Image 1 (tube, rainbow, N blue to C red):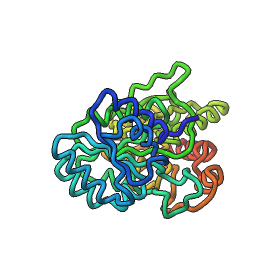
Image 2: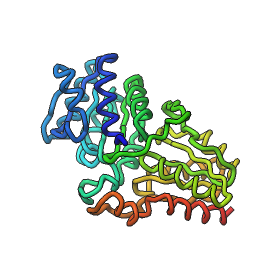
Image 3: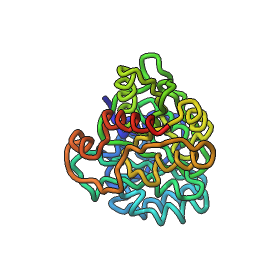
Image 4: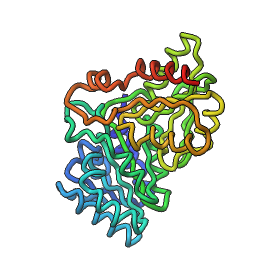
Length: 310
């Protein structure tokens, strides 16, 4: 199983042959996997050192001169440390900078709460004009990276550290577009909407629910912003209840984005699987998934609870 950060590195190295992109990194190129691009296109790669805010400023300068730039570091340093530069130097002038943030969420493992960013989707969603993407597997990551290149404006991409099951294989086709969600499994009783590492866990939950006679739809909402409002509304009408699942604080992330759509257009019961206003802590990914309830079993519980509220 590949991680989405590995898929990101592979995508950059591949797409660098097709597009004249530039890549910056903040002294983490092995971890963020930009090392592959650096070896292949050294003249278009710069290691900015441990200076994330400076990196975003340089990226903004390149973009202001017409370049498309990927600025890569951990999610905590991108969304947190460099927030001011992203907001004012990149988003405000709507520049063509793609902030590629790896190691998002608590499922990265033992790095602990200081490095486990659980609020980045909320921070980036709140910036006017910022596109926010969180792919689920290798193929979707490649498509997200290329979509970011082709999009004229700022994009925040979030990638995980650990290997995750491939969603788009065995006949399932990835048709990612910015602003569109993907129906991974259809269903009629409850809708499970997930992002990133949680998509495979939602699919596992759907199988468990099926064994109990419950038909669960699974939607991969890799485009967190703009979100696919029409798809959320359609499945709210179809199933009458929705569960969101994310390796992120339930406040302001995917759960918040979906609830905003439901509140405006189609109020139905919703349950949110994610961090319940908590920081991360050190541990193995498996132990952290259990501790924070980021498991297929917890999604099953949330689905049953949500169905009872119809």
